[in-house]
Image (cartoon, rainbow, N blue to C red; front, side, top):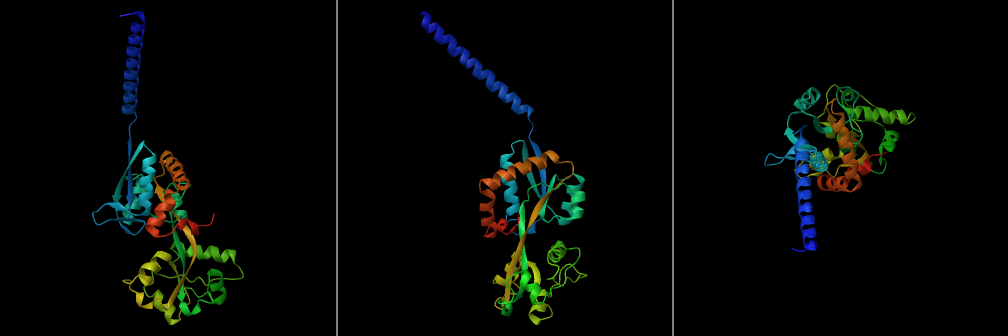
Length: 282
């Protein structure tokens, strides 16, 4: 073997040894970096936000976004648990679950009990259902207030109550009549509007579509007699356990990336048929 061949052989052996050392170092580093399991609680019938599909698997827009977040965070592995609303809140506050998602709006009480991230997870589009015969007079919430402002009573415990309060604060000379209800949900709301007892029902767009527009909806027979206009999109948020500051920060960074690359908009189109964030005012 000549001198040149020996040099090549030595270099090859050195390169192979370096590669082996690098691979061993990378493997050791991977073993040291433990992937943390994050238990995510979610509701099971809140279609299309969070639900169980026919095979019992977690599905829904908020679930899909969190799965996309998980893909961007190799240091975490999200495990989803379908639970009751009460179990979600109690379990997340106590730390049994690190995150809970239920299409939650922000309230002062939730701010005290949970860590709320900077970026919302989804949005609920809300507006008013009213008699179709009034479509020329009622085109938005402002024109409804001018028309009569006679709104179906709302429970003060409902987040919708605070939305109307905010509207009235911004429109002191054009108020909606905000009457407190002693029940959370009035079953005959659509009928009360049709009968003329009230002139509008403040309701989620998805609920109107499911109950009135859908052929199998319980009020579909009134589809031509009722109309709907959206007011705004209310952001919904994942609820983090108070101690999960690092996890919440990682979530925020990942969600921002998913916004910018169009993933969230595409998922919204898939689950809602539209980008619900288009209704959210900055």
